[in-house]
Image: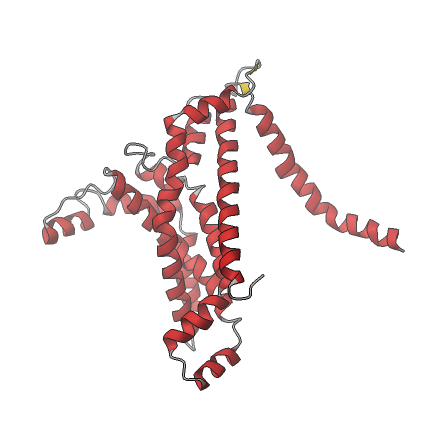
Length: 292
């Protein structure tokens, strides 16, 4: 009987195992092999280089910039997105009617084309655009939104926050609607204020949602491509140069498939370490409130 159930288990798991093998294990193995080669994607000959591609990548200022850029984005993107998503979720959860319509309205930016949104932002922030004209008229300032390294990082981070806030709000909304009302009723009997209820009940009970949002946010900041590609092309001074931009330029502009593969593997290592640290931090914080 045990062998019968074991066969059924392998049979039911086989689609996922096949998917993992075809779309993860084989590409990963091919990527590791490719990272040891010098190949231009066209020539039939390939030269084995060993770890030279990795050594070159670790010395490259462009790769150093790609390592730092996700953290620059995270410093603005994560607090802005989490705060905005929480407010949106609380607003949607508080209304009695049209919750579905409101949720869809806030979710729409996530569905918008990244290229189209970036082109709109570039037009709005252009020197003769409406926003720049307004700032010059009212504040007598002429900021170079996409030419200044700090402003370029802020602009792209806020644009990404606008796009992801509605998506993350749906995750928080699901968390809010799963909190037992008995907790609030008991706290109200003890005279708790709405402020205390939020910080002592709502926020800790949103731990699973916050955990998910933070992991997704970290992953998203390591894979940003469209916005810096359209708005800044990785500049100015490599301030918005991301991993995906470096891989794209090395692969399709320089035709260095082996080097691009080594950069992609370094990117994967950094993502793994960053996600691992966020997980440990969140598990430490959740453990204070009884979450395992």
